[in-house]
Length: 182
Image (cartoon, rainbow, N blue to C red; front, top):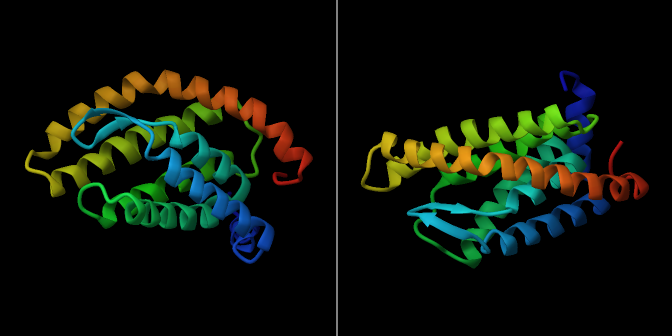
């Protein structure tokens, strides 16, 4: 992860028709599945979009993944404009892709890596960043959104880890066979 080759490998995906097609498909999936969720409260819901984001990050890496995150957020908002467009949420989508890629791209997929990716995504990206954006956009203070998001992300975390383990266990042999991962 700390080598130029690691990052250039991800950049090269942006020049490949094969990977651009995969990126377009994952963006489309994110837009569709992102609109299938269970609402918890104002600006807080349960979704399985993180599964697509994780698989995408494993395939395309941090740079191409962040591009996918930005495009998926903007296109998703254009297709189904819910609330106000806010660039902070685009940064959050990019940060989620970056986090999954740093833990899982060109790495052996292990339970500690999956747990690490989910901990950082849930608590840094979703709770800290998401609460900041909500407090900027809506009428209540940061700690109000922080508390709600912290509870939701803590309760949902074990289920997300189990879902991610199951999905990656099923998908990784296919990705290896298709030579989409190293």
